[in-house]
Image (cartoon, rainbow, N blue to C red):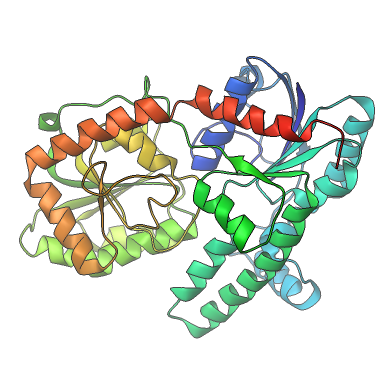
Length: 409
């Protein structure tokens, strides 16, 4: 097969520092072993593809189109937000990616080449894709159910104005996500739960199926429990993503004090790129918080901790950090939302808890019980190796795409 793979503003995949970039990269590497991929994405003016990016065999051809984005928190950013609120029915996170040069380039590529399928990676580039690809089957790869994220964020807001804004973005995203997804020949999700939501909530008839998350379990290897610091807890993720920031504040305000009451030397290590300003203040004011920022190798930091927590109250989609942690043999405590879509069993693969008191109890139990940590680690690692190889995920993706490569319906 020959695929045109279209991605939005995070079009440079290196460094592999977000779950979305890791998933896209790993899938493309595996797909490119047997199929031809032409990769087209946006990039910011100050971003230049590295030699590693250019030489990486994740696509036969790679092209980036320059695109500008207002810096988050700047006056132009708030001007765009206001303009979007007043002058558009589209959610801001989709409207900002509408880009005429991208649309024109997609049209040219489709006219010049015979593609078996055009893949819209995430929903964000959809408005650039749909009008330009009438001669080729189209698939949207839904890493997240975007409206679900906004709905959960709105429900957790304490500030009435923030709640009103998030609720409005949820309503917009729900309308546009349903409309855009229904316009593709096929929708591929990342979990059975997301597929069911698309079919039941949106009434979609074009959901092809789901592709499980993967992990490179030769890269993410376990270390002995005895090598880990007993009073260090890890959190792993992109720290500019709102659900991660929200989850850390929830953990620090409502769970961490319950744990530290009997463990005053307990430390929380927040591992991930671009920490939000609120997290920087948190680390400055609380010596029990260690904030790493971008790190070259997350394994070194995770392996210094005895357990990992995933206290998410919102979010959707990829959740690769849980699979990577399981491959590293680090035991996990998560909310149900944090581990949603992975089909994991509490008490067997990890521990699940939602209320602050329950989360603190399960975290404390795991900190105190070396045998429980060992059992969870071993079972989780086995589960990952048996079910979450990237080769298997890529093969499933191709098989789903082949459902729409017959004459268009």
